[in-house]
Image (cartoon, rainbow, N blue to C red; front, side):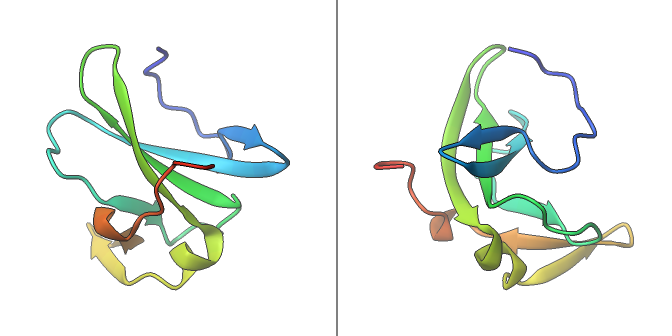
Length: 96
């Protein structure tokens, strides 16, 4: 697993013609929510939340479509706005 951070313009994967931006949280977050920077334009079709559960293990927790993220509540951390989608509101990956 590659754990480096890349400035990728908001697209990590392509699946069936859709673009996906994967947001990964570290092991220090036990019940993470999906956060997406509101300062930049939303470019991906879907935003997926992945949680590192071990040195080389990742758990995919769910996803949200771009419009869902755009309409999510906005919070601010250190002067930078971000969209917050609580884990309970993420779409399950079954049947993707």
